Amino acid sequence: MRTSTLALALPALASAQQFPFLDQLNPYIDQAKSYLGVATSSVSSAASAASATIPTSIPDPVAAGAATFAATKVDRLTLENHSTLLKSSSPGIEEWMFLVTGGNASCFGMCQRAEAAWNESVALISASSSPPKLAMLDCDNDGVLCAAWALSPPTIIHAFLPHPLPDQSTPETTMRAINLNRTTVTAPEIAAIHLQETYKDVAPYEGFWHPFNGMLAQYGLQVPAGYAIYYFAKIPSWAFMIGVSFISRSVMSRRMGAAPTRPAGGAPAT
Ligand SMILES: *[C@@H]1O[C@H](CO)[C@@H](O)[C@H](O)[C@H]1NC(C)=O
Ligand SMILES: *[C@@H]1O[C@H](CO)[C@@H](O)[C@H](O)[C@H]1NC(C)=O
Ligand SMILES: *[C@@H]1O[C@H](CO)[C@@H](O)[C@H](O)[C@H]1NC(C)=O
Ligand SMILES: *[C@@H]1O[C@H](CO)[C@@H](O)[C@H](O)[C@H]1NC(C)=O
Image (cartoon, rainbow, N blue to C red; front, side, top):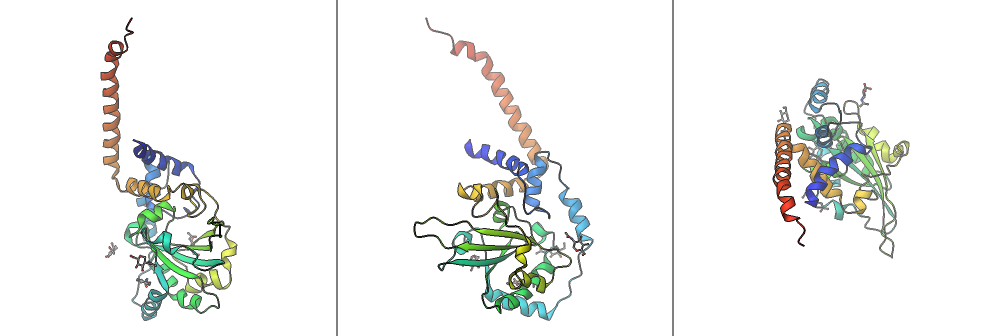
């Protein structure tokens, strides 16, 4: 009962909250919002408008080499290992950068350019004197995590992860979500986030969906929220409508059925 109430309440909460990262589309949250009658741009129309601008991808030996190198430097962030991976392992503050990407399901096949640029930027970033830790999150494979953090691809997350203090408390994590332009992003632009500290152009995110300091994270609700939003988005709208009418009808009939029995059950025994 509690979980089902939670599942229904979360998307409502989601639509009421400011989405920090939703300049671009997050199909999971977009759909969850649309179920609640919140007017949002429709996923399909946005997708078809977007697909008109897909650059034709030409196989590129540079990209292939970059991908091979990137594979050795970039950790894969998943729902299973994100909590162990995203931890500062050494005393002091650790810098992290990760790419949020996706395939056909979560990025409508529009993340190719950003991904290739990221792969090429890995060599540039790794050559710096204090390279950040690098990772990649694929929203097609780990949609739950993307929904939990309200992230839409392609985005770079830049974060400073503090090491837990001796008293086990963890200081606040500074995190920024840097949106990438799917059609124009380049490798030097991504590398500059670290090398020229262009992350400072973006205000750190403080709020509800913050993966470390946010309210959901503090109550351990982020992953359950991710599941709720993710599976909400997976339900076809016709099935959702049938479900709603079924539930409301059975609630109504239970009320109707219960009403006549109440006087009998509640009769005072004198
Ligand atoms: C980027 O590199 C990863 C390995 O880290 C590889 O799986 C992926 O296909 C590459 N993407 C592009 C667009 O080259
Ligand atoms: C995280 O999980 C992915 C997929 O299972 C794996 O490829 C990667 O090596 C893991 N990373 C760590 C640090 O455990
Ligand atoms: C993504 O969609 C394109 C075009 O619809 C298709 O050619 C491609 O095989 C799809 N990729 C995956 C991984 O499903
Ligand atoms: C991406 O860049 C192009 C060209 O500069 C611009 O027309 C477009 O509006 C940009 N898209 C976003 C989402 O900023």
